[in-house]
Length: 41
Image (cartoon, rainbow, N blue to C red):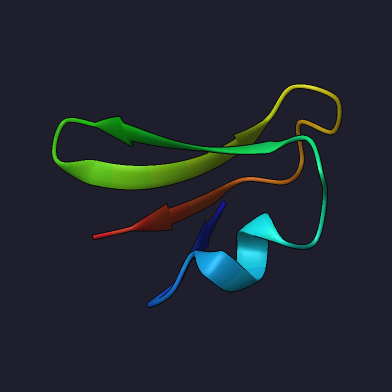
């Protein structure tokens, strides 16, 4: 899990990435490649 200032850079690395809001935090998750995770906030 990476903690980033901007999640746009994490999102464009893979086309299966999704940006999700949970508990006031913004996450990038990827079902196909579960190692691609990032968090903001």
